[in-house]
Image 1: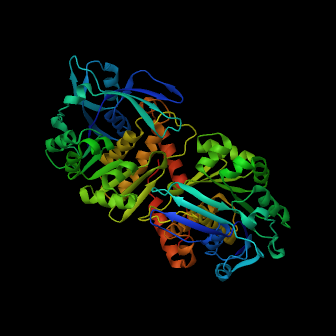
Image 2 (image 1 turned 30 degrees about the vertical axis):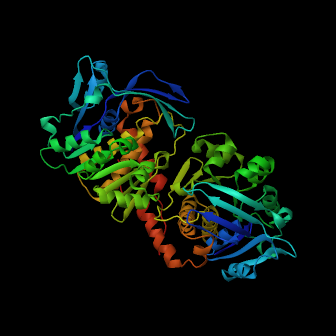
Image 3 (image 1 turned 180 degrees about the vertical axis):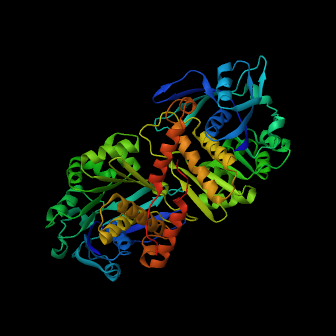
Length: 308
Length: 308
């Protein structure tokens, strides 16, 4: 049981996959992170910004998961961040059809007083300057600051990104982005280079190919669960991050062994996220389903070789 | 300790990677399979065909690994199968610059009398008709027949391929080929479909992303070891197959648990193969190096989550 502060978008997504399409539905990094993290016993809060066009039921949904939403600024007459995308047939790539920043363009995050001493801060993918502003508002150094980012910020705000990652403990990033950030093709070398930039732990997300955790000379790998159907990958990375951060806030141990477990919990929750459009699967996900699939993860990866 | 029969090419490879290029060097599926399998205590034999242009030292190299080469036909005045390829910068894809079948065009495999009762038969990538001919020469049903194949035979000899896979126990195949063979995008579904065609066990090779083992409802995943340097991927899949088959011949247990271990041993050996050009790394690979890296595999994947 810890205190978890989540910063990121609460947004409208409009999604097309080979299996169907949606209207504007609830999305956003902080939404997925919050829903995943709600699987663990924590006090959680989201810091974000939306317009008053966001249906009240979306915010109710988050509040019903015991997430403090007092840090979600609602701009009167403003419009909520909107993303529209279409996935290709293999679901591994997508085209962005529309991005409207709207209220997000002027996001000036305000951390609620009660969460300025959070144990874990999960900085969802946002402008690195916004991420840094949140760190600077904390009244004490959190036990763990986790940051997610993407290539967009490497292309457009690299100096700001390099500044904020000096101050964090864990970065989650995908394989191509790790290569871009370091000019190293080998993920082992890329992770070494990123550790020199600040974060002691590097999580490299490889989508359907799993995730790698690096720390000093140590490396741990968690596969993605092989699924019969992947329906919509939207939010899988954020769900991973939410499970990862939520587990660490709840257990508060910052050992490599505990971070390994956090990677497994993150991968486990992400495997549910992709089974339905948007947040649908995560909204009503039962603890028993989660536990059952953890057993599958164990069966999937554990072996017993006599080592000489 | 068992008897292992290996069928496949012994060949000349000429390779270019971003790190350098070779002249004509020793290659071929049976070569890599044999070298990997020689890490285990077995009686092994290779059935293949070459021309008398193949340097005697190459055959000596195999014999020195205690591989019976009496089943390698040497065609007087004939030329050995030759492949030339160039890898792209990411090492995940390559262009074939030349393929000369030469003596392989008329390969009529002859299983040595002594190996007609082999425990394990490892059919390297070859025309499926040739693979079937080997099965038909066995004096008793082997405990395990493992077959490797590729998309070329799906495009050019699909009926023959479907016939031979009716008679085997394990197929090793890469992810794209599994999809092509079944028209299923989900690897879980593809593995289900392939099991209906004959093999009780399906191994899907994903290169740098590891390998999956499927049997009935069971699935097991082994990652590829994250390496600082991948130098030349040539032969990695065959090395995997050789470690897999060699371990199973030596231990003779055909349980899912033992096949899991075989997948780990195969992945472990493949991680060495890619560190040097061609067979170089596998020629002088020490037992201690292999064991040490097995420990790394365990550290890489084993976790300890309290399951509820």
